[in-house]
Length: 125
Image 1 (spheres, one colour):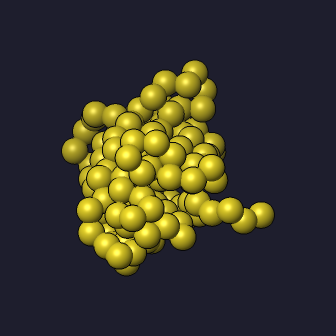
Image 2 (image 1 turned 135 degrees about the horizontal axis):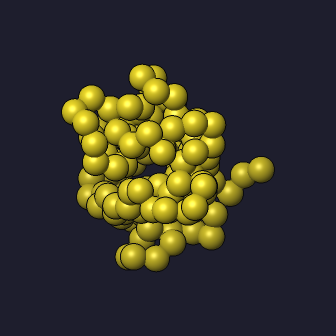
Image 3 (image 1 turned 60 degrees about the vertical axis):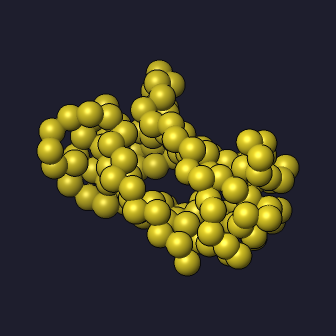
């Protein structure tokens, strides 16, 4: 298992985060043969403002999945039930690694709490 522990501020603000999420990304892809990057975007559901966007290059192998990331936010507008939507895309050479290698998930972010989310990228029901 590879851990990409990234203190990602979804928006700038005070020192202590308002809320945070521990994100686990699962996929049946081999790195770097089938996947060499993860594209992660977060948008506010209300209004659609993008609050985070980054591409994480994956160089080690043979299989670093699941990947885990820690994200935090200091912006009160990012809090609430289904306030933020994450989109994860597994890439190979800058394009989608497989037709099923992307998924969106809404998050409930509560002030002063860690949320746990798992996004499974797979060709499954």
